[in-house]
Image (cartoon, rainbow, N blue to C red; front, side, top):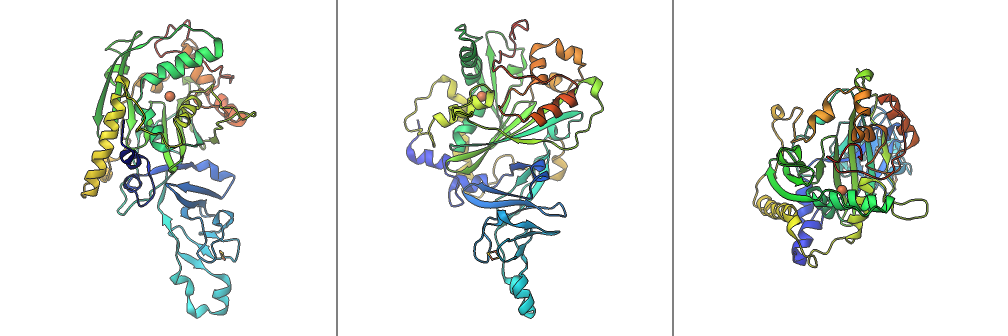
Length: 435
Ligand code: FES
Ligand SMILES: [Fe+2]
């Protein structure tokens, strides 16, 4: 349980709020690069700020104020130029540092006045890595954008999934340090919904949580695993400050504002031996829906199940009413670390895990369970013989709504059939015959 005041501290992300200022010290993924194959501007709200992300004709990305400096027209309707984004109302043009570089009428009638030199709008630095566009909204000097090892794994078919989830970011991030929900939400409940089968999967027996430079790891044993298993010795990574790393995929929870979160998933799958070498031309990005055609919550896929749990906690979860249990030790540790960080940063300290030394920012390794399974080169026959791998190679279990075109690209890259996901995921160590 937390006081309302402490809950506000964790959840408020405006530029004048301690957490808003804290999160602005980190690079955030905000879009997939390939989204700009079919569009040149994208309106985007980040931590309560309305902005527009664009890619100009020279290929430069810019993230600038959504409103034009002139008379506040919406720049997401603007047109991109060789350099910069031009407002569609009177043609003022802005570059990626927010400088006004043209005012067509003013430049014509009074070129000597150079009024544009006095005009600028808000802008933020943008970088690209791993097929993602990243933004930094904090004070300069910006830290380095973390070069996670996964972004340079070879022979991979990757995809990026983007969804807007109507609730506060922090309850989404608490899910990154919540091992027990896998057993109940994704295994038991998912199976009950789809089959009516009331038999429960293997239950958790023991948990541990450890902190490291880039977050926390959580460790578990269940009835079907013991202390020799990767799930205990290595664990999963709750990535600081707003991510989750599960080996073959990352999830980030980027605050749109206090009541909405941008979920960004980056998912890798290594192509079978026979399909190598494989170089992906561009990482497809798709929008994952939350509701079906009838307006009901989608509950078949792993992250859709998470989404409905997070939103079900309330627009901003009221932590003054909760009653924590033994499974929440990680949640408590993470909250405590955030409170300590907010105090430390207010006193002038550097936030946790920022990277500033380029020599220390090459293909950074994170603790990773199942490393061999994700990165070894398996033949199609070997993949087929492992039911859980076969499931991951032939369908997309994490979110509903994968477009047919992406499904076909994936099937083609992997050289395997594509099929529908039936919504049932078994425990990692389940008897393969049943998995
Ligand atoms: S409002 Fe943008 S140029 Fe006039
Ligand atoms: Fe989950």
